[in-house]
Image (tube, rainbow over all chains, first blue to last red; front, side):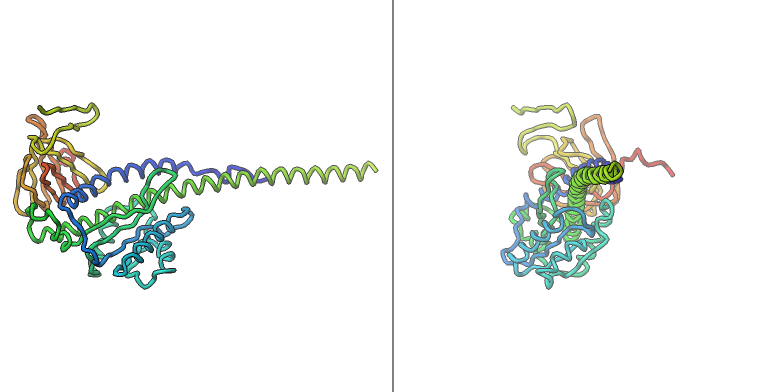
Length: 247
Length: 113
């Protein structure tokens, strides 16, 4: 006889969610520090500049609409900017994006999302992208913003190249040495990718949890219905056999 | 007259605009925030262009940090030191200092070995 416990909700997801929340909150400050710099310097990308779209997702399924949300947003940005190229993190997102804008994909990464993202992973990704020497005036990192346990939304983080940054409005206010600028760009890029990875991971875990919860509920209902049907059938057979004997 | 409202929970103070005499200091690592808009007096950093001390109303600049010790003088009695592996210090015109480091540990966590 089927047993409800077989489909028990994995409670460790609860602990995971709290841990993910911590990761997301703590990383916010780091990237917002850089964000504040770009705000204060009044950095704006040129109108027809080259845009690099970095889509952050993961390799695994069973997480609801996570991959489609990021892919749809990337597709929209790619269509608005004909001068754009795409780098994808995660096989599932790559599959979705390949369906429409395959020619724009320059690089893709996999083995993403198996465990909590580390800063080392983010800097390896940033390093590889920069080594490819893809020209861009602005990079846009598209990830799933973790709004709450039941909702997420595709959002983007802008990252500016050195040339865009040096052309900022208030750039002259800052004293800066020449080689520091390039390092700052790489650092900000790695930071933003890390932010995208961590929030994407948190959203994905939350979405998996609620998908699992729904599956459990549906399976539970099905078990109840089938149990009733089974019992009715069993009773009907017994009644028939009894009535044969009594005849 | 400046109005200071002291929060009970953390070392956060609300203050007025750029004419304050303390530095708004944020110190963040990728996975942890050590200081968030805390009011401190002075921060000494080891940057690639030399060791420097940052006080309020410092000239805005962007400095890359060498691996070394960052000393935070919160007030006349409290000083905290951290060892950082590297990162950036960004001083904005509104007397705020953001330090983003990759790794940082308080000096007390190190043993002589």
